[in-house]
Image (tube, rainbow, N blue to C red; front, side, top):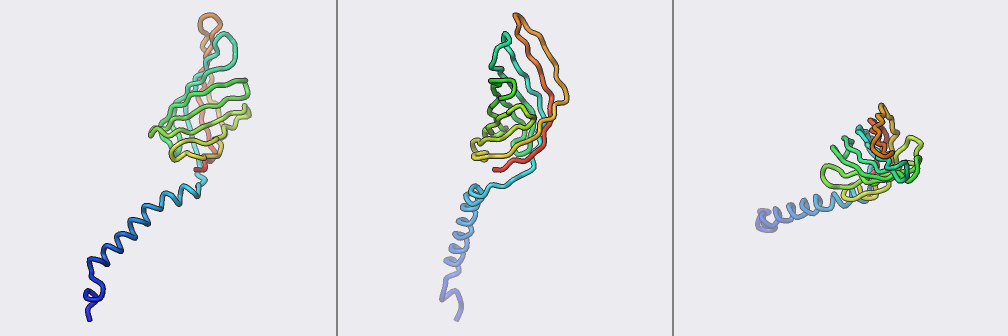
Amino acid sequence: MRISKIFPVKLLLYVVLSFTFIGFTLLPAVNANQPVERPYQIAGQMTFLDIGGNMPWTCIDSGVGTGHGKFVSVGKYVAPNYGFGILYAANGDQLFWKDQGVGIVEFTGGTGHFEGATGSFTLNISSIEYVPGPEGTVSWVLTYTGEGTITY
């Protein structure tokens, strides 16, 4: 007796393709529930604006990093040793960060594939350029790199 009489070949093909589709559909959900720690590297330039010598300072940042490619970031430093902000990845996902002034920047969540992100990197400043402005406004530009880990 041939198998096609017991179990039609077309039906077998549909069953196999259905299970394959279900497996690939559920794969991202399984990975989202099991975050992975990855090495992280970043390089960029951050501009601080100090208007009239008063806090908070506004910072604008751009560069490239592992897992998000090119980025822009905006943030505030409410004290010389505490800042926070949002990094916008090339694909639009957001990565939240905070800096407590000890040379370590921490990840505190995000959106898209950075939802629930954790980790940190050590900040290495390679240059600082001060730029005086009108009426006591000062800005400075930091060029930096960093290495650490990120989990998402």
